[in-house]
Structures are given as structure tokens and as C-alpha cells.
Image (cartoon, rainbow, N blue to C red; front, side, top):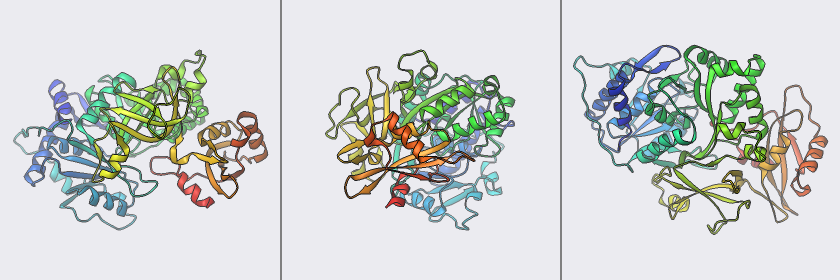
Length: 511
């Protein structure tokens, strides 16, 4: 099994169909994409790269990203995607740990530091004349056979965001990504050859691997000229090339909705720009998705997964999000949906025993999407995968219909006076308060109670928050012992490169 066969299949079936776009111009048909990958794969092999060797991509979103990825797979190599927002030294640590031999970069992401990657056999700037020569096709057609790989061979070595220390390399196999791609059609969205996926979120993360189901369907792949997220640009591109599909963190969804509201766009106009927005990677609060549905209409799907089970865990479908007549609609809206088709989901106690419905415990995932393990870290692998189940570290509960509701990461749970308190429950309440833009709840050390609840609150523009009113709302909605003992009003919340709030940093401030 080699994922490069997906590209070869499309190149044979529909060679002239447009495949890769930079904004509106097409830069490659499926046949051209495949021909370039064969040529690059031949050069990898001629340079002595062997099946299983690692090639790093330290690049902003770029039209050549997908060509490097599939060329590496064509040659039997494994890809190491690195977030372009990392510091060069952080990227260097990943490259060293992955023992990568080559790297492809966009030089603009290193200019601010003046530092360069080292200890690599070759570093190619994809915007350089060197890259143009590397990509230049010879006059004679290239016919490089795809290097066959086993289903459990490494394809994608993804490094976790590392909010609590050095990131771990997650070994994702060809089987893992094939499972993810096929599961997309079952649980997330139907895809046609006329569809276009836009890469506005980092291609080094979930947005990039969603290329796989869209390639399976023969759809189009579009990198915005900005190379990132610009809501006005995306709305305009959707109008020009047809409704876009994309993966987005909740922070990106909020900015899309803000733009639509500010521009006075109707639901119909939003539908002309966007077909499907799949969101995940961080909590999406019920109030935020209700607003998104109200402004942009039924074009959202929520997914839950982890780097260790990429994009595959649960899904909250378009139907469930808009089924307002269901008696448990609000509860479902606050959930992350039901288990995706390729996996099983359990909620267990600290001993790994299944808990009754409604009780909170650790979420476990089992299936062909679960990683092979952590790169060069057998101890962490043994801790994360036990008896075939991935222990996610997320706390949640299941209901009788199979809907999973996340409470928090296990490390974020607050224990105050012997009682377990889940910050997300408090955050959901505070987000309904007038004038609140964002909120994060953490525990602060306390000599009497062990921990007390502290809420960091970001006010909306030109709004002064009344903490007494916030306290009154909490007393009205949740148990007294759960309410924050302190409110800290801040201009913004610290976040990592994927939009996740860094609660570790907030706890450090309190300490």
C-alpha cells in the first residue's frame, strides 16, 4: 500500500482535469502533478535516499507542498511536516530527532531570525532557481515506478504541538491515512470532482492530510495567494472558483463569521463562497457554533481526533448541527458527535474500566487510524497505547445515543476541596455573558482548597466587563462550588500555532 497510487489513479483516469491552483490560476493538472512527482522521486532515488528515509517540509502553505509530499511517497520516503510558525531552532530540533536527510523550505519563514537549518544533506528553497531546476522536467517522459510500501510503513511523521514540553513524533502509516481518507466520505462530507479544497490552515497539520480524500474524489486543491487565512480573500475566491471546502480551527471559524457579519453577507451569499467548513483541533463552544449557523447556514461539520489518530475520532454531522427540533439538540450541539465509522470509542476510569453512560472518564480510541507509536520513544508509546486502545488524555462522557461530550484534558481538570471541576462547563456559561469575547478557566494553587477556579476573560471591543454580573450568571447556571473565585480581565489569551489556548501559561501566571 502506497498513498502515491491515489495520484497515479487520478492521473490515468482524468489526466487533463485541473488539480492544483494558486488562487484562480491552475498550476497543475492531475497528469502534470503525477509527472512532476515521478521526476522528483527519481531525483530522490538518484541522490541515494532509501525507502523509509525522512524528508522534512518547513514551509508555509505553497502550491509545491503537495508535489513534495506525493513525490516523497512515490519514492517510498516518509514526510516530516513542520509548522511554518515555529522558530528555526524548534524546527531544527524536530529535524534532528526525526533524523531527516533532506528539507524543503520557504525561505521567508527564516528571514526574521537570520538562522538556517543545518545537519541536512540538502535544503531546497521551493521558491528558488535551484528549485526550478530541480522541478524542471526533462524532454524524455519520466516513468518512475511507485516504490511499494507495506500498509504499516511510516508515511507522515507528525510532531505534536508540544505545549507541555518537547514535541513527540507521531508515526502515521499509509494505512492510518488511507483509513482517514475513506472515513471522510462516510462521516464528514461527500466530495465530487467539481469541489475545491482550500488550504488556509497550515498544510503541516490536519488541513494538509485532507488532501487525501479530495484526491481520492479527483477534486481540486487550492492554495490562496496569501498562503494563509484571509477571510475576505477566501470569500472572494469561493465566488470565483466555486464554493470552497476547508478545515479550520474554531478561531478561524469565528473570524469567517465576523467577516460575514461585518460585510452584511446573507446566508445565500455565504453558501456561494463555502460548501463545507470542517472544524476541530480546539473546543468550539455552543454559543459560537450557534452564531456560525445563524450567519453562514448549514455548512459546518465538527470532527474530533488527535495527532495520534489524525482527524478520526468522532464527528458531529451537518444534520445533527441543524436538527433544532430534536429534544436533545442543545446537548448534542455541545458534544463532539458520535464515533466515526473506522473507530470504536470508550470512556473509562483510571483503571481502564468502562464507565456507565453519563459518567466522566478518559476517552479511548481504537481502530486503523491509530498511530503506530511515538518515534524513538517506546516508553511514551507503551503509556499511550494499551491493548490496542489509544488513551487520549481527554476527559468526556457518552450518552445513550453515542454522542461524546468532552469536558477537558485530564491535566486541565481542577480538583477543589476534593471535587472534580471541568473548566469547559464554566467557560460555556461565561461565553453567554454580554460583552465576553473569549474565556479560559484554570485552577490556581490554594492552601485550603488545593485549587480554586480562576477565569481569564477577554472582553469584546469597547466593552467594560462587570465581574459581579459574571458571578451572578455562574451562580444562576452552575453549582456554587464551581464558580470562579477570581476573574482576570485580559486583552487576549495565549495560544499555540494551531489556535489552542495555552492553559499551562495561564497557570504559570497565577503561580
